[in-house]
Image 1 (cartoon, helix red, strand yellow):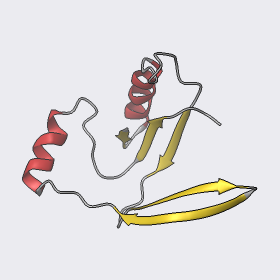
Image 2 (cartoon, one colour; image 1 turned 90 degrees about the horizontal axis):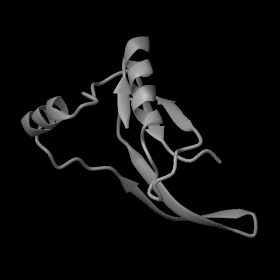
Image 3 (cartoon, rainbow, N blue to C red; image 1 turned 90 degrees about the vertical axis):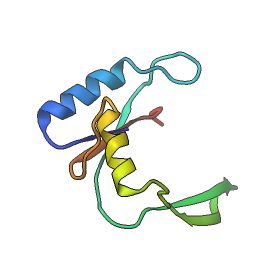
Length: 94
């Protein structure tokens, strides 16, 4: 995941993602780009059966790193994630 704030960073993230392989070693067929929204993050797990969605659980994301450790970790990462901008994830297109 790359958090980008401007067009230059967007192009850089897309170039990096183009060189990223999936678990089987193949190329991804697309990129999902989402706008960053600040606030509490939740994830919903579920299954679909006979055309209906069934929610199994809802979880709040909890970050266990302290602010100083998170900042140090973020500065060591090549994508230099920062607040704001769009997040681009390499995921198979469906």
